[in-house]
Length: 93
Image 1: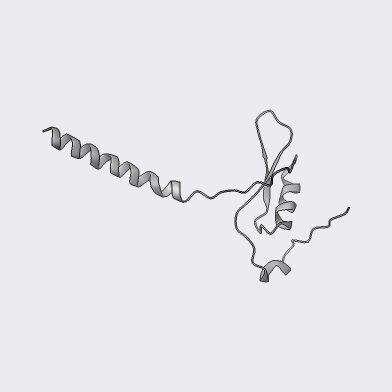
Image 2 (image 1 turned 180 degrees about the vertical axis):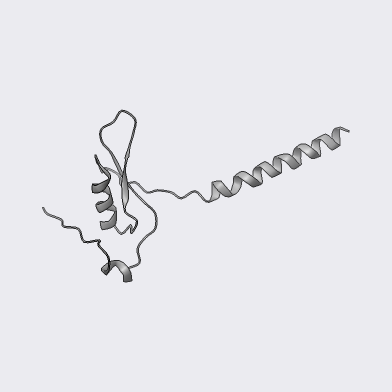
């Protein structure tokens, strides 16, 4: 009887593991630019597009903070398509 209960428990444990594992594997890492400070998404979107992230970026703010850090959406743009589109950024010194 104890062996039967253990095998049902083991089967249930394996089923739970099988349901959780694909979600753990499919998590995308969102790269954040160290040292970048932002107050809105527009500046981060332009910065990330300039760095080659075709999907742009956003300002990651923390609770009770007015500034945040720029994070870019994964998905690099190919070099062939970098000349087309609205990715022009004006940089002044």
